[in-house]
Amino acid sequence: MQHITTRHPAPSRRRVLALGAGTALATLVAVPGTASAASGASGASGADVTRQLRALEEEYAARLGVFAFDPATGATVAYRAEERFPMCSVFKALAAAAVLRDLDRDGEFLAKRVHYTEEFVRKAGYAPVTGKPENIAGGLTVEQLCAAAVSESDNAAGNLLLHDLGGPTAITRFCRSLGDGTTRLDRWEPELNTAEPWRDTDTTSPGAIGKTFARLVLGRALTPEDRKRLTGWLVANTTNIERFRKGLPADWILADKTGGGTQYGVANDVGVVWPPERTPLVLSVLSTKYDPQGPTDNPLVARAAALVADALV
Image (cartoon, rainbow, N blue to C red):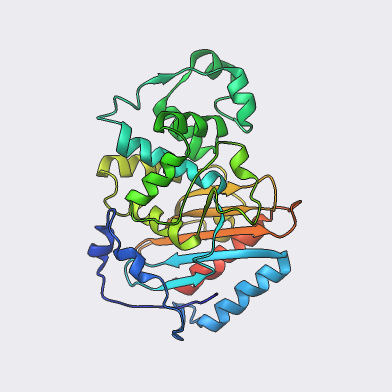
């Protein structure tokens, strides 16, 4: 089911931003069967946006899922928003948030130095930070591992955070505690990226992960200090250049996390964006291919982001 709906409902901006682990955000998902249009300054109708997103799917031979939400007005764009997609490295932002909420006390746990082996890094795969010889020799603090996992998408850092949390299923439990009944993690890096279309494991939906990011970055799921720390790591993201950063205006502040699979051309980007002189938008774009060989198409994510952002601003 695909639908795009705008709602301009009751929640005030204060109420939305005050959300922690509550369920009020979930009520803002577009209602099936309604015919009102997703529109903003562009005046794009729901039918227009649906047609353009479907055209992108056809052009890239992909399955595309989109959830975009304006907390100030309740305006929502949803396209395959409740369908499951492989999550891939998007989980690393959740792992860092779980460490902040559940393990750290006044920076003490973040300051803990973690030592690991070169073999551990090799098995994890992509490791631009943990793989440096000086870091293998001296280890990294948990805070540095969080930054490496979120800002650099370092696989070994992600696995080390999962180890501290008690394994991949800790991410599932963390999401459930936030009111997210969909997002789940079952495996470690790099196995979690296989992205077979029949899997429910290691998946999320655009709507579920978008609302979870909203609770973490804009709500009260974290303390103000931890929310600021997580947002800083997301703003420092280096892996979004050809995705959200490419599709959105250069003067928009972007706090996001990407994910990509080793098969089926997965290309994801999820986060919160701040256009100049207006309230933030929540944006989630997930995509996958039907061909196990991919390829991954960053322009698909960039163009989808540009399209739906234009519909809301």
